[in-house]
Length: 497
Image (cartoon, one colour):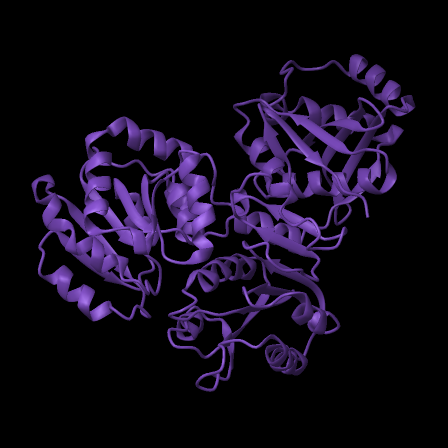
């Protein structure tokens, strides 16, 4: 498995593109993929950080003074040269860049097997196989109408937010008694110096006995000034380019930050957040989250003074119910498993499906009656062999029921049952063979089943599943397989090629 990622970081661009791509690259690496980065040498780039994480980085030359940071046609030629020099086929080219679009992607199309685009602007056309937008907007499903081909797979919404695995691990940690600890981070570059503005507002909150963790990126142009500000105040701890963001954030009661990639990290941890837009592309998302009660949005950086920041902090400290509401509402959006979902889509587990046969009857009876299977079944009672045999033979003869056995390397791993409610809708139930739990096979089996239905029943538009509320693993498996939850019912609207 070979993946090439084209993304940049700079003082102007910020660090968000590289940070989310690094999270994805780390997950892909754990699954055995070989990942390369192609980055341009811009002021504030993070090439050294990528190298420190043991990823090979191909650096494109810095632009000539007075020339834009990225010219698509020139960039395409330079990227082609890197890709062509690699010894083996590139399975996926990942593109995370606001300047690059369909023309650039079309040039690379012949050099790679497939293209994944990470976008959150929806302002240009793309030539890609998969597009991921982790944003949160009204009418999200229509956001890319006319911008991608009909056979492009869209992965939309915050459940695909690409976060470091430390956030999913940290979200279950219990904090101590609520206090007055603030986490301040306005992105890797913070070109408008919102960090300095926040620190300058601290005298307005002198009576609150605050403790602050202030984080800046290595490319922050105001780093030395901010460090001096922090050193002059004993309640502030200064951090630069840390690898412990999740841990620091989990200790905080309130966060102050920008509307970029860190938005989803704060949401995952349920950290009540005061947000300021530091770039034009952050405004629409921050406004939507603010209006929906997920964050406290103050506006664009040019409109926000230190006094406004102090009043916002004061308000959240004075009203614990508001903090609790922001925490709960934000946590609903992000579970922290976006990288795992995406990696399984890019490189799915190989599951072979076949229709159940007469010889499977007794084996399926034993799997269904296993204690771990019954634990999460709507009917947890053991089923007699006689009753099972009657049901099994009836199911094989029923045109409105499909019973499938999933196999991996010739060994059974699970069972799928599809009951057709109509020509347009089917209900799926699934369980794994005992001994196959805890390996991530559930979502792979479900995805394989959806593909099977899609190819053989072209009139079917929707697959639904009902899962017990206490079946946490089952709920995660359906979400990871691309289903969405509607009032306790999981549903996937399937597209046909």
